Amino acid sequence: MIPFLDLNQVNAPYLEAVEEACTRVIRSGWYILGNELRVFEQAFANYCEAEYCVGVANGLDAITLILKAFEFPEGSEVIVPANTYIASVLPVSYLHLKPVFVEPDPFTLLIDPDRIEEKITDRTKAIITVDLYGRSCEMDAIMLLASKYNLRVVTDAAQSHGAIYNGRKTGSIADATAFSFYPTKNLGALGDAGAVTTRNAELAEKIRYLRNYGSLVRYKNDYQGVNSRLDEMQAAILNVKLPFLDIENRRRRQIAGRYLAEINVKDVVLPPHDRINQDAWHLFVIRHPRRGELADYLESNGVQTNIHYPLPIHKQQAYEEFGHLHLPVTEQIHREVVSLPLNVVLSDDEVSYIIQTINQFDYQT
Image (cartoon, rainbow, N blue to C red; front, side):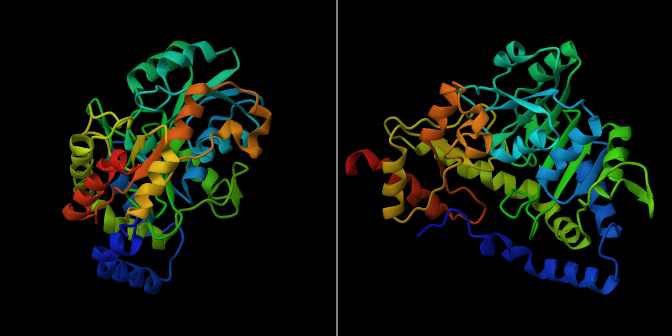
């Protein structure tokens, strides 16, 4: 069986360096808000071509703290993509704001800039973009709309570490960008971890307060904050792995390039390839009207797949108040998508086998 993702294999090349880093942290006696975090924050800010990076506990908190720092009035509207993981929208609800769902572009599967403006009202305060599968959204058009209506733009870049849009790195374009370093991400920690990047000094400083109970000076609390800190151990692990992110992304692009060039199956819709060398290719997501049959066929032939994601947010019980929405593009996507294995430990032979197997689908069903 070719696994969808084997984290033991992914992390094996870094094992010795990670063990040394963890030992260093343990022996230091300093485990929260220390030097490892400062080093990572500066390195990741530089990598993203952003002025500031603030490490937080996870990607969900990163979005939440950004929105909290903006201090939008309760009931304000935030435009969100209809096609995304629920974590992109939960922070809007947590802060008593109203998510306004916008359909995706059926080609990119990302929020459609042409559909955003019709959803903007005098209550709209922000747009959340989500770089699904490792591709940046159409940020020029979105930033132009935001400027026109005086809106904030927040990017959820949990899947686009190292992606590039028009010469700019993910993490440097929106007013603020949220990253997750969940172990499966292109830059993955060995536990939960996240960060915010921004070019706004005031915003970065406020998020530093908010992540630490609203305090920068011990026992002096300037805001009603939370406990959401990227700990020294995870920061040290990320410091080990960050220098290799571009190398790993190049391998992902090589595999994606082969899939795009060699998969030839009736009714399979491949992802866009116009930015093959700029996208981070966190996931390789195809579409097929008989998704279940295709996934079962691949599984029975030794290829593990995944579905990102099987049920749209507005059809989840957690958001039953939006169940009445008619979002046909989103609903079709969620019926058809299936993710093929795409990770840096896939061998060329395994990639060839996956391609050969999927190309036989029409002849076997």
